[in-house]
Length: 447
Image (cartoon, rainbow, N blue to C red; front, side):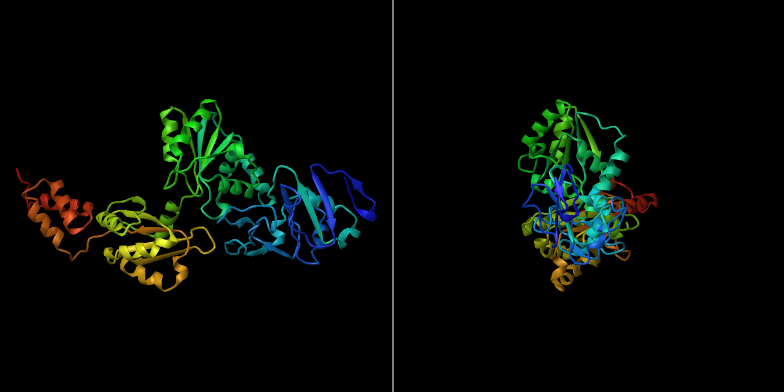
């Protein structure tokens, strides 16, 4: 039951309870477990209630609100490093936590504003509205997106007893796919690398899941937890798996789980989306040199111990194809120092991809350490490191001379392998050169 004081209007609105105050809205989580709040920051924000079609259009307001939407400001949680990109102003830069954004853009479709838009204009003096919901916990910023996901994806086939590998954003909430949103609502339970992180991410999209519907499946228990997931699948349940960010099983847990599901002859379905690996390659401009191999090699995180890391880089040094590495901010300078042995081989540092402070730079390997030292901000955030394809210098006669010595005595493949190990030249390029030498009759294979 609610009353509008002297106006004399009473009624019951389920499942909402409404309270009107003549002051700005305060955080409502302490009032209800699942609350949502619209924040009005100015005494002149009341005109947002005047719009007659407020229930179908964004309400107008000149105020501002915090983009992080944490529980101290309002009840819509944002997962750790995630950002609420859809609420940013049109044509503005990507936003990050605690960056101000237009309150107008946070007030999306809501029957609350449709109700008050039809009330007498005398209500304009009220400067804020506080609304409480019991369930579900609704993020108004994504309400229309969830409807679109249902409209577009619900007609497709989602088999029972299947594991759904769902890709999630790597830093920008707007990068979620409609199919992923639909599946995360459809499945019976969700296996998570971190249940708390995933719960917060789901609530950012207005998706409510009880704790019993979230299963912890991480690197320390994946083998054991996989059997629990398999048991659910054998009962005909749908189960989704999400890592903390990006595509599961790519330098994240998930591979053992998928292997266990395949071993039980059950179905695995991919729900593709963001991957930091492919995102970084797309902006690196890593062009294969003539004679070098195409494609790329994903090496992930190199060992943290200096000796082991140097050995790994020495091994990658012989790789002519593009190499993709991942690195954390507290180790990026150590990696840059270790990469100096690559000389002038081009390296791309892709930092904080899809986030506000995203940056991509191309430098010779022997300049990376100095470049990072020039500004402490350059070492902050998560990194994808791209080693561009190696190329053999045209004026480097050593590989050719070595091949000419080896080919008369050894099989072609053996000669190429030894020449690549000794000189560090791309194996594919050496192989083509060896073929040319043999076809030209300059040297003949032994035996």
